[in-house]
Image 1 (cartoon, rainbow, N blue to C red):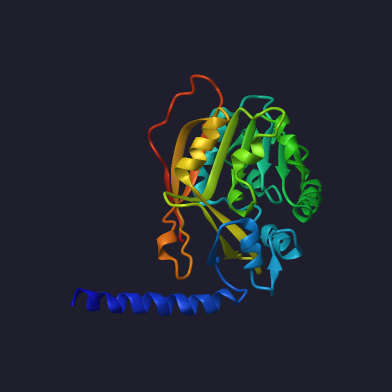
Image 2: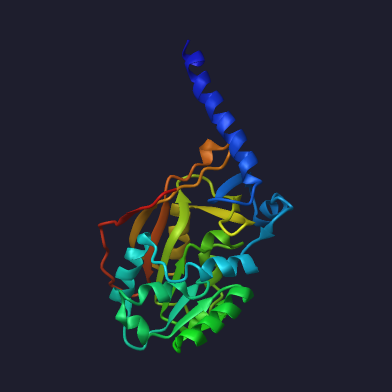
Length: 277
């Protein structure tokens, strides 16, 4: 009898996933996820052949143009730590910063941004449009690059919702730098307690891309190996569900503040930002 009681839930779950898998093939709507892959390359091969790929295209540029001044409600911990860590003369490196939307959105809340050299690192199409937009808006302190090596010239490394789209994790990206940034603020990345994996995301701008899910403890440990102390972390109530793989469910995204400054006080409270999955 116990087994029979589980049948309705099992049947509903599989029917739902079957329907969602068909919807995944339609390039319209909120992000959806399909497939479990061991590597970035395998996930790339698993992407549907129709539609765009990644963020280096006109559709992604258009999407960010319409949202470049929107403040994400789950970025308040970032605002808090930028204000705490910034010192006059510090340069900020915004990895995966698109058109510079974080700088535009944060400016009303952080007057310091007006004077801070802010460098966005992203794909060529976003960098090109970002430079044009910065010229139009007179944002003289906003710069753009496609080269991560420029992060060695900055004190604060910021990345918002970008690491999950990369082949390598953040510690692997930082390790080759000639000089490591003193502060690292990471926000909106999918982390959980299970095994790391890749899936394929259907994005909001009509494309598909590999999507990396990381193990939280392994990520923190790898940053510690670079000399970074975890000072604060918080949860963002956004989730990842991969069709037909409930065991790989990611119940929340994470945010982290790491520091290489000796004696940085630990923050015990956590900020939980609620958003729709």
